[in-house]
Length: 98
Image (cartoon, rainbow, N blue to C red; front, side, top):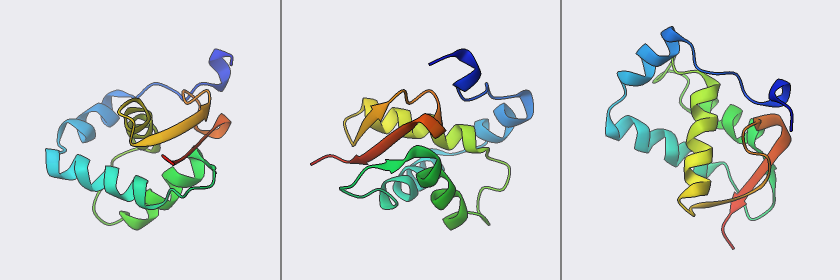
């Protein structure tokens, strides 16, 4: 995967919004992400969009890139299984661990 296909870096405003998140907020985001996964592979971009939609009134300033970072963390922690290059949410898929 080329750098052009990687998700962009978080900007300063994004960092401010993310730094305001509590551990409970992060857990809620993680739960929303996992709840939109299935045993079948789903594009990370789809999972992120669905989770953001479910939480749209709670975390307005938190960007999709942060949600994608949380997906990468969930994959690294073994809560989700990933395929493809998870640095680019449009070019990777996740599913519940089977």
